[in-house]
Length: 99
Image 1: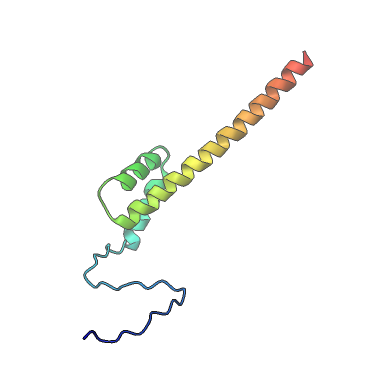
Image 2: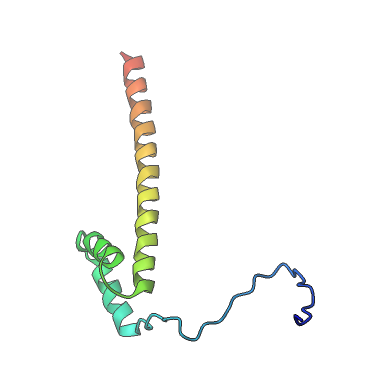
């Protein structure tokens, strides 16, 4: 006969099974972050390195950070493009109405 199991109570809190065998990415040292920040200061090189760090081999934490950074950069670029188009259209309509 099967053992009695009490009914499960849903507390609304998700349960996560701890797996000690789950791989953990190594901690990124302060030295590595300092070098990363120094490289990010250099124009043009920073954009290239963002792609290298986001899609190349390396620490998964660093990869995820730079993927998120590239997504934010794309969002900001689209917003700037929309604003530029609005200003150009407004300037063009003002220029044609003055003639």
